[in-house]
Length: 88
Image (cartoon, rainbow, N blue to C red; front, top):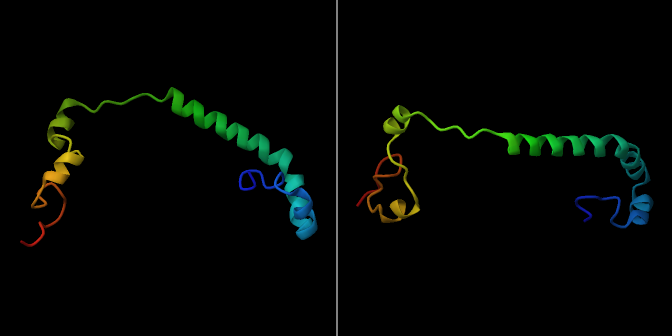
């Protein structure tokens, strides 16, 4: 909790150890909290309303099939990985 809301984690200690910093944080709260709430709201709206884009068939054919984890595990000579194959 102290990492997320530092003023709620032992507020007396913060005022005692760093009074100017604690004062600055208290002054900034009315500005930063609404900004953070707006950022959170619009960030979520962006994710919730995002359109899924499907690439055209020509691009999928040019790229080739997808390579998954079992393919990489069964690839003994590094043919599926970029770069030169490892020496034998």
